[in-house]
Amino acid sequence: MSDFIIEGGYQLSGKLPVAGAKNLALKAIAASLLSKDDMDLVNVPEIEDVKRQFEILERLGASVNKLAKGVYKVNTSKVSSGLMPRDLVNKLRASTVLTGPLLARFGEVELSHPGGCKIGRRPIDLFLKGFQSLGVEVTETKDLTYKLRAKKLKGGIIVFPKISVTGTETMMLAGVLADGFTKLINAALEPEIVALANYLNSQGARISGAGTPIINIEGVKELGAGEFIMMPDRIEAGTFIMLALATNSQITVTNCQPEHLEVPLSVWRDMGAEFDISQNEILVKHWKNLRAVDIKTHEYPGFVTDMQSSMTVLLTQATGHSLVHETIFEGRLFFTDVLNQMGADITLCDPHRVIIQGPRQLEGRTIEAPDARAGLALLTAALAAKGKSIIKNVYPIDRGYEFLEERLKNIGASIMRV
Image (tube, rainbow, N blue to C red):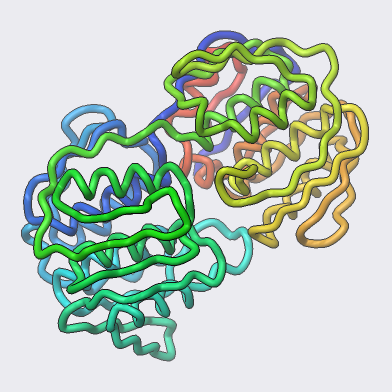
């Protein structure tokens, strides 16, 4: 396993480019199973989660050819089974989205309980109930393996009791080849869902309402594959902005879509941050004093949970008391004990709320990355801290961010992988 050695306390400057969206690429790879034609994937982030998703496809019999950085050609015509490799599924929660296309192709899938970041309870009941609404028979074995069977997926009404991005995408991928009409009620609104629907429609699907709480899908008999270009990763863009603010650095975040960050940009302005925004770039300016704010995570277009960890770090540098209320995952605030070891003043009220008193000068420490988002947040803390920090086992960070130390070195960060 690799570690990062970081010398913090310095201002950074330059351009920091954003990679393709992780949360779209994993679903785009799953969409390749909907057609036997060649699929071209462009602007794919070179991250560990994408590698694992490709590995699952290859184990199923697909061919995956890398043509250039971030460009892949995938063909799934030789996939002959829905038996998903347990050892890989256990490492990647996004493997769940492969289930719908595999059911459409083969009528049977065997899936072990998917893994992923340890950020709280993440049951898959919602997915199983959704599939049952499409006529799938679900059987659970003692070893947490689920056997799903359906001679043919049938359109149905799926009501999400709570908003789920992956649930919405999974059922959308399942519904496009089902017989009849499928309606998703209380669907997620994320831009990645709109991008996925637009791609599917370009290949012959009939989806309407993506980006609204109700999505209607008219099933079709077959789809093409074609080209799928990944949008920029809005989570990474927002995280880079907070990295710039936490280190009081003037950085230009490039290759991004500012319209996907309207709510967090408003929050950061309330704190006293200033930006110059163009069509696909955000210049983060030096600040004189950041003010404390309260935040409450919410599904898009609110302040998304995947940016909460970095926001918590940023608030340690703001003047006053801040309340962070994490409404999505109950484990996402547990990393704050590490920030306290670095000199922060954070009180954990309960698994969903912390109170932060700032500003506090952070000090370098030897720490470990608990998951992808908290891992990058702690890296941001290390860059803002005085002295040397060592981040042990950076694999969780590699799961979500490509060539991160190279991009940070290009803006003046003192970071080394060992």
